[in-house]
Amino acid sequence: MSAARQASTYPALVQDLADRGLLTARWRRVFEAVPRSRFVPERAWRQLPDRCVPVREADEWLALVNSDEPVVTQLDDGVEGGPGIATSSNSMPSMTARMLGLLQVEDGSRVLEVGTGTGYVAALLCERLGDDLVHSVELDAVVAAQAAEALAQAGYRPHLRVGDGEHPWPGLGPVDRLIATCALRYVPYALLRQVRPGGIVVAPLARTFWSGALVQLEVREDGTAVGPFCGGATYMPMRSHRVPDLHEVRGKGRARAAGLDPVRLLDLGFALYAGARLPGVRLIHQDTADGARVWVTREDGAAATAATGEEVWQYGPGLLWEEIEHVWWEYESAGRPDADQFGLTVTSRGQEVWLREPSEVVRPARG
Image 1 (cartoon, rainbow, N blue to C red):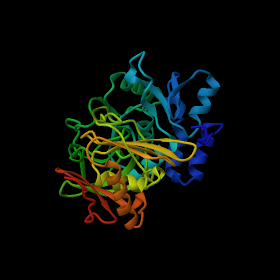
Image 2 (image 1 turned 60 degrees about the vertical axis):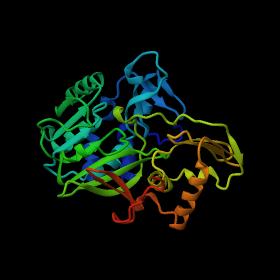
Image 3 (image 1 turned 45 degrees about the vertical axis):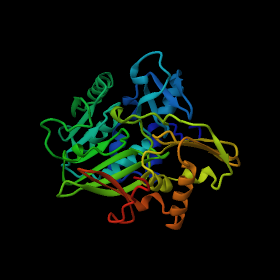
């Protein structure tokens, strides 16, 4: 995170977001009216690539709050003595601005937020729309209470609820917009039923094949939702959508020469394509001095690991690395499409990734 953009003050941070084209004039006024510092507790951590580091000094805390970095506000679901995994945060301001822009709210829009977190996004929505049009649900009761207190102290009183955001809000009725501030493995169809036809859903999806991706969906009259992917987005997963990074590996290793530099797999467009062609295959990576090292696994125990300039090792049944290489050449034959050429369709039967047009579904390569 050391390369993140820094600002000396919150107004300077908002100016930077505006200069980058992330805020309309209306949203800029909203951000200026809602200081981020009101929604970041004193106890906070900076997220590094491999760990969370506590922020101990007031000057360091303020510098972090006024930077375009996420601020971690909870570890290990609030349980002391855990491994130190971030489980709640105040998101990167640039990502918040992107998502609110994609939400396309209008005067009078009724909005549901899934994942209240610190309450900052709810406050921005209240400033833009008014308290009565903003509804926000949070699963963690402690996090929800802290957000409610911060919102009240800042003068905002949206409709708040403690509960599982994967399920509809009882008695709420249809809303015009839905924004998820936690990553989803899939878009629950029940949530779409909470949004009126013509309404918009903006959510980060946790793609199992390396990357997180932001999606913007429009709900149709028949209850389905269709829309494009809109760049990368890394969020903490909804608790009910958490899965281990990798599957259990079976069998002895078998080495062979690599036909593909694993760095090529770390592209969001390929991640979306490969995730659709190889459903269930999980990939994580680590940057190296020469490029990258990747680990991939599948539920049947198949696995592979590869690093730039080194041999590939494969494990378990089948030849998982060869399958990935084959999918890469398919992707290359399709012109290496960028992530913004992919989209998603969600129905009562599930979700499908498509390329360029909703009718061009990217179907699984395996049964």
